[in-house]
Length: 183
Image (tube, rainbow, N blue to C red; front, top):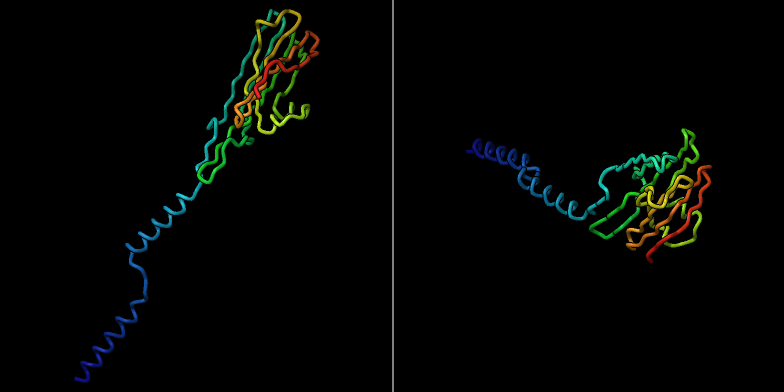
């Protein structure tokens, strides 16, 4: 009897020693899922407009005099914040443009256009969140002696814009002026 009691006691000791307080697989899985859901719901949703790099290239010949190459593109790293809340961050990509103008196979103007360039020349709060929207040839107002490019900027936060015109002569001299804006 003593021998059976010893075996029973030894068996109970082994059973108790093997219970380390570990969680079962189902309990561990349920806790992991709950932790993931808590972390996932706390993360901000990030949106970017446009979602991917964007580029538009336009080549034009104006009045048989000017050959114009315009490359409008989104900057791969620069953005303007549109919305920032606990649940969402929204960004608008910054756009820039490279413009080259030539006559008779001679480059007369090569320039880079961006909101940063205009911000450096104007002291206006508009430029704090502005980005280039588009640069295009205004064929209606261009002639053999001068070329007109229209340049639009937007502030996506304030839903405002500024529209400029750049007039270029056959020597590459240019003048840029504001023609329209919203406040």
